[in-house]
Image (cartoon, rainbow, N blue to C red; front, top):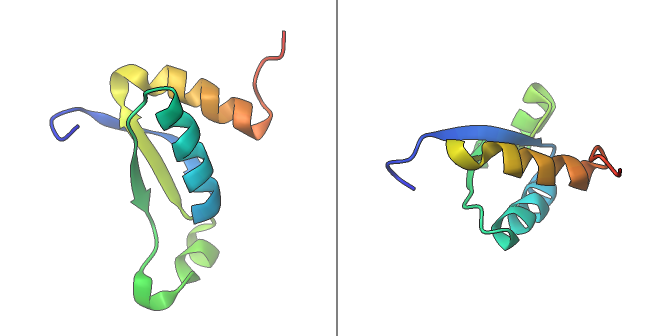
Length: 80
C-alpha cells in the first residue's frame, strides 16, 4: 500500500470503533491504515480537543466501497 493514494473514509470517535470498522473493511478485502490524532503521552486529550480519535484511510480505488461498509455499520446504509 505504500505506493497507493490513500483517502480518508471514516472518522472514528475512539480506538475501539476504529478497530471494529477496520475489521469489517479487512473482512471485505479492503486494506486500511489508521491515522490517529492521539499523542501517547497525553492519553486521550486530543480526542477531547479534536472531537475524534482518528481517520481510517483506504486506497482511493476502494474508497466508495469502504464508505458504504462504514456507513452500514453506523446504521446509515440503504436498507432497500
